[in-house]
Image (cartoon, rainbow, N blue to C red; front, side, top):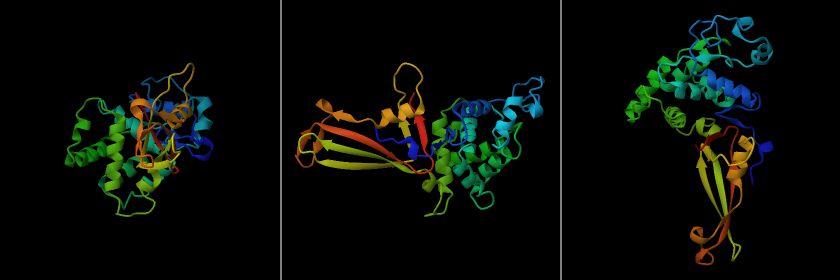
Length: 271
């Protein structure tokens, strides 16, 4: 395929992969839905000591240089879908820093999110309650008839993330350089080559997201496997023949996908 992981900094809404291991990202996401009922910072509701500050001894040095890594979010009733997105945002450095920079100059949703992320990174353990931000976002989405995302039921994290980023974009000045779009929007470039005349044509689809299938294979499936499968060459024949402008008829062809992204890429795994 055309995906070259060594040329891309894989900072995504699954975490800043330049600093975190896959296990650490999973742990951070799991912490998103925990309520620390005993106040010891470990999110398990138990008073059993876990080492200094509620952190296991072998985790202390590793988490010390990652602000907010161990900071949980209160679950306000089936809001783990929101908390998971917030934890991923918090661990995507360039995106988090951009939002926090709007603490005093952004729109209402942006300012409230900037404050929440700042609170999450103010100390390394314990929990933060996202209720105020959730209320602000709900009011914003209500204007677009999307407030059903906070009806008390379980919801889809990806749908929430798409609407949240749209809300942040709406609040940015028109034509702003270095905004959400500059950080996230990449392109899926499809090259189609006719098998008869060898004519090539390219179609570019700008998007903030890459939606990939989880390939069926034995053993462990990695994120790189998913991306390689997404970018693999595909033969278009039979009912999938495409119109060739040069031959002026439908012909067999070969399709190749290439992902062109910026510093941060959002990857959705199809279920």
